Amino acid sequence: LLLIAFPAYGESGVYPDTDVYSTTVDRWERAISSSSFNSTTWLWNIENDRLHKNRGRDSILMVPESAMPEDITLIVWFHGCGGFSQRTFSQRLIPQMNSIVESGNSVALAVPEMPWSTNTSTRCERQGRVWTRVGSLEDYVNDLRNRLQGWARAVHASELGTVRVIFVGHSAGGSAIMAASREGSLCRLAPEAVVWSDASYGSWLDRAWNGCIKDINTELHILVRKWDKPYTNAERVIRRIRRLPVEPSANVNYQVLDRRSWTHGRIGDSVFELTDLFPPGC
Image 1 (cartoon, rainbow, N blue to C red):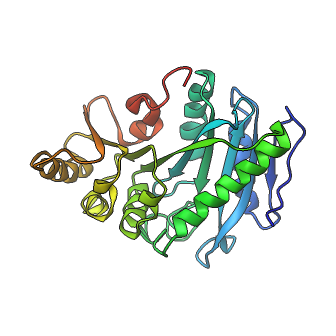
Image 2: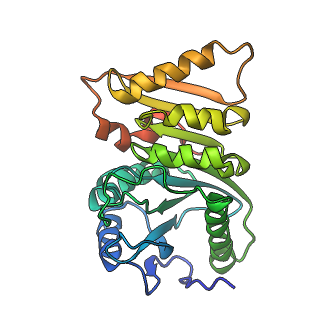
């Protein structure tokens, strides 16, 4: 039985489990103090990790007060090297959530901590070593759904309705998409969109495409900065896709951004502006 603390209707707050890394709680509280909306956040441990300062990696689930349980989009954000940091929370996620919520969208945000988190001794290592166990990403998303169900019943006295899932991988987060695509969980979850935010390093995009993404009906957004390594790798995959005898199941949206105007970090800070996944009022 999943036991979660739920506030009274309209009351915002942060609710960490007792084994959550206190530094992460402090960082998140500082980040949401600058949000333009009220919200409720839960933090809990998702994976034991001897290379983590707290010996375990955590997850965040934040639900804005304006979210409606009958139709909600769940954003699952896979952070980059040294992410799950104050910058990730305060400068990347909360400003984008401000815009999404202010535009009238019903959303929730989940941020699982990756093995390359700022809280580990491997801040840009162990890439791709996540979601490799059979069903592991499905288990995580099902846990999120259960928590949202509890929120819907406790706060709105209703059942959870449609939950649309969007996966975003920024930078090293692309390796998480790759791993989950090769294992298959990512596609069994039938995401509405999968976003590569300047994340196509090495052969990650190739392996993700060959895994299962090529076979599902989803919006696939590939954002790259021209001439950088993710661009070179994405070009190789895009050429393959364009040579296919039939249109792929995925709706592929490929954007090459001017390197004079766009930095790697700015792409991560502007994912939803670039992809237009949350038009006003949707």
